[in-house]
Length: 208
Length: 221
Image (cartoon, rainbow over all chains, first blue to last red; front, side, top):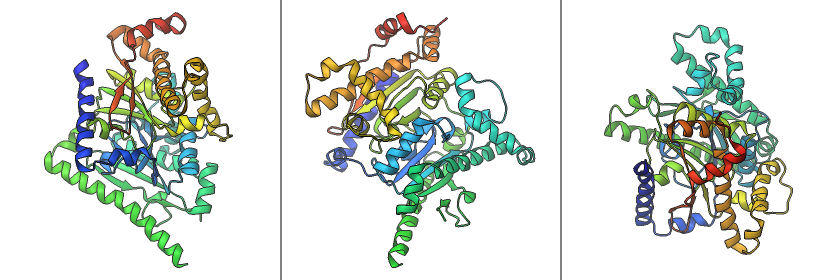
């Protein structure tokens, strides 16, 4: 069991040496502070390391990851992240990223018990499934249904974010925008959720 | 108006950059291993659950050299694990009971903005209840912390906060039950330092702590 742990500590030493070879002042600069331009709200799923899939650098993305990338009204964990990122760090964009083959979305297609904690957390996603029953029933299979539920869930999270006081203020004061994305695990590709933008084709939500 | 158009152009460009980078990365992965994404889409069985700070400077997978599929991730302000927080609790539950992770790592970092904000005598609105948990960590270790000053005091509070969150992880029924049955997951407390880019192991004693907290927090039966 220790070698599994050594694996990441060795990885960390490798990362540090590589980074310093490339730029000897890298960590010095980082230690002075952060000014990320994006708040990334994604799934806890191990297959979507945001910095890797966006080929980003440390310091670029402020990150909140939870089960099924949910932003529930009344969740103080996500609300604190949003408040800190938007009001204090002044990020320019908030991105909510769902994905295909999402365990949370698949579980939300049915009502099988996952334990009280997870069932409570996924309740709003299962409500979305109930609300969009006829649309989902018309889809060919559960894979397609899970993708659609993931999309609806991203859209729902964006609706909650739009009503967050910090987001509303920043949207009107300095043009903060909110975007919905879906990551296709089978292709490794990010796709913009068209309907989260107003026909602009880039998933952009703007206040007007 | 010209300025507004420029801002719009900048926003579009910074948005497009992520997609360009993503396409380059996906192409490079497929070139290396044509089955890479197909394999990933079949499922995940990560060994680790990482509970870290939302801070943009600590991308968990990058600093540990792990690839997609290896680590399940929760990141929030100041890497807190609060018992009434359904968000973090559902992550722990899923990682332990469903994915059967072997290690849970709580990782803080020196210079944490959340920890500093919590020690500021200021009304921070919705952040107050969240950051209150850090003030409580201070109260639990007041004697030790009061002997320190300046950065040394913040650094130690960052470490003590990680250790308290490790204890909080162990107070969950999911972790206690799984451990009683399987001898895993093992909980670890680490701190990332910007000065050297290295992870510091705080040597959290899983076995001794479990025994200690189960006097009061035992949920195994």
